[in-house]
Length: 394
Image 1 (cartoon, rainbow, N blue to C red):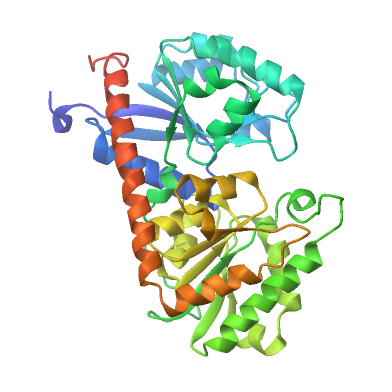
Image 2: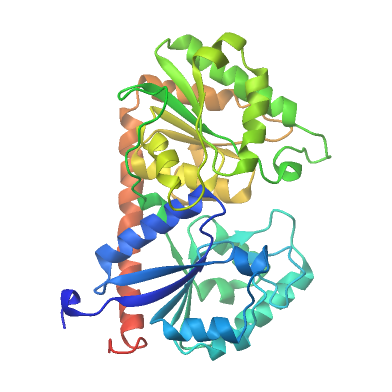
């Protein structure tokens, strides 16, 4: 039966939809590429993971199992399922959901594009519980795992063991293939030249602290402000646009604005708005698509900008940012911020790309093309796996 004559497959998608705009960009890219590569129409239905973890409005119970069994396919992720510091769940993962839950689900379960978070260290308790969870679930014929291409496989290999890493394919994150709708932006006429700057405000005790605990917030803000001032001074046609992904991002944005020259922050700086969820991400990510250059601290700000071919440089205050650029062969475009760094080299590189962007744009396009071929192959494997497990497809 051809794809256009098949009924759509219902997909229960457990993920974050209102947490961070990058999650929505990731889902957009995933849904688009699945539609292009798989021989079935997939009807994704969101199931907000925060209802189970943060807000406690739901639990992984019989009601959830029944909901999962009404779908044709269950997708879990992408998010950082493996939080190697977490000791407050029986599974050792982000979810308070053990093997018995997934054993009760009769539908195929795709754990897709999972990440590893070791920002707050690695707990032996979490490691032992995660191994016990995987020892069972990896053996379920109806469950399949993949890790996103950001160095997560290396963390699994090192902390859990090679057998666990080898059991999970490494796949590109959907954010690389996101396609936002064009949006009008106040203060930015069509054709404006601007640099988009994304600063992350969550986990300030980890992002803006030295190894010995010194608070680096003011040093970071001064470094960013100085670099922006130099870029704007060198090009009178250039504007700076700050792009928040979550409410906490306004914190470092405000600190940089405090440190900026008053005339520049009043005349040549814009702070984009923030609308959460599916209806908000396009407006923000359209700015990366249009930018002459991008500086990104958040994972999907960097990844989507690579996909758009916008000359992008990462600031690494989280291991997955450096891992992301390195995994795609762009390690030189990521600059760490810590107690020893001053970010001068970052802004020098941005200035070079603003002046001569052609080579960088071509390099980013080649990286995206390589990752797209990897994803196509993965989707081919997925189609074979799914066709023998989803009802009516064999």
